[in-house]
Image (cartoon, rainbow, N blue to C red; front, side, top):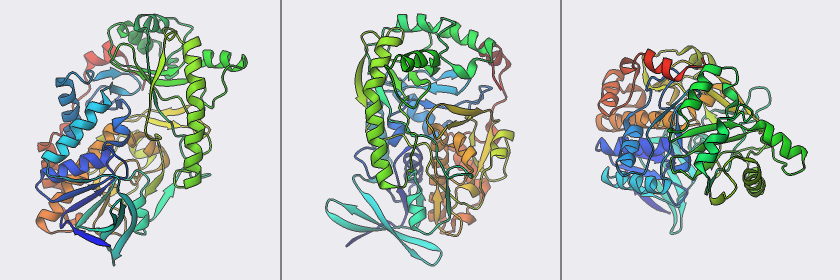
Length: 470
């Protein structure tokens, strides 16, 4: 086995959290290695539109690295404007392929060593510290040593291999949110599609059904709005199902009408029985999801307005897994914390996306409002390990809280926080729990992050113009 000594930060997983963590650490001048099992960086952030830059009262809660990337893509003409939304706070769509190119360039500019097609297989631990990770590559196995590690695997693989405590799914039965295989549709007639959304009988946003003011104001904006979030068409699905033309777990069409006029990202496949850390279950999930793509396409073409000439453009290269292991940190972020908008002295990121739990049977979602809440550094430090951070959907939180913290923008805010903290620990040769919070928060603010101290007050004009549902 060959050995690579980093003497710096090692980030495992290059999704939203891992990408931001590696960029933050690399930009701080610390030797940084980013390990990724796939052939591109970004994970699901390179597949999906991004939601949740804003709260439901339209306060911007995430910026920093996430905002920088969106701004760069917009300057290239490859992303939409950030569109405010009464359910999701805000949404932005982008050319995912250009995003991958930009992300890789930013990593190189930050001096990050990127190891693609590199599979984590084991962790070396000495006492209460991780000293290295064992990876498998085409060229053989390799030990990557480092000072501070970041688990951004999404499944909490690094932490689990290191012996950390973890939980999974609902308290009652351990079942996790239903995953989705996203696919992209082209050939849509935008004018006909928007005209269809104007019809009262279509019901394209079920979560707004009890909020007629917000729904009416949304419909007023649709003709000029670049990005349209969808979650409805239940009546059409029911009709198609009763006619024997559709048999899928989902009871609604979930997706995003993206900024290219003729395109939509469908987030409608759902796998009802799933265990994200069981290899056979994972393989079966892909098979189940692929089996739903063409029936859904046929349904779209026949039943949705403006889809008569629609065609399948692309299927995502990876399953969108909403929930997996939740690693136990020094603090577990609770459902009450996110719903009450709790503040913490060691807050290093802010979240405000609604609790959005895609039910394990795959049928629909359980949505609950939240207030802007702090994510404390203590929820990102792995309990019992002295040099291991966790960020992303495997952070230390309850099942319900993960339904809010798991979205791309919030994961990127977490990643920027732990990457900055890891760099500080390496620079100053201190433990991750000895990183002083004040200087860390100041560094995050210099990096453009939003913290409680800079969280804007709600704008009453925006609330009046768009409407709120909380």
